[in-house]
Image (cartoon, rainbow, N blue to C red; front, side, top):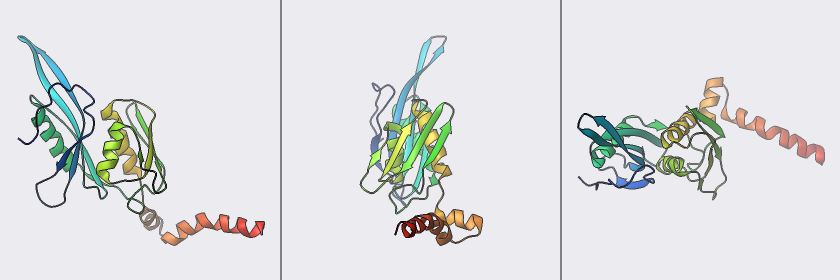
Length: 198
């Protein structure tokens, strides 16, 4: 096993980067969001296990998350990583660095707001959300968690928001219009206002 056990960690494992995927094909980066020790009370005492939450992405617009539980930490991380790879989604990005529009996401008591940002802003987000954006490949975004601080709820709410993101091309095709028609309408009032001011 390449990964070392992390028994003394508790929750909040900190978004550790566990390197690249070596299965071939696209190179995937996986980050450990949190690892938690859980106990099952049995007749002879307590039986301990570890629950891991991992996000995986190719840093080119695809990202996924997964949770895994096992008696040993490396096995829990492996299970979570495998599940994350099977549940990856594609997120449309503007200029390959930010979101096309602001969006909100919810999951249970978790609620997040994601905002597109200007070039050079960087990733302004809390721990679990930062791991998602880094593996996704977004370079400029402003995010705020308004609800639960539970890492699982925050990650799931972030994914709910990312799944609501749409590119101008997809919106135009759905409405039977051209992309220039959608973007032109937004610029037209500003142009008219400039003419009135002159």
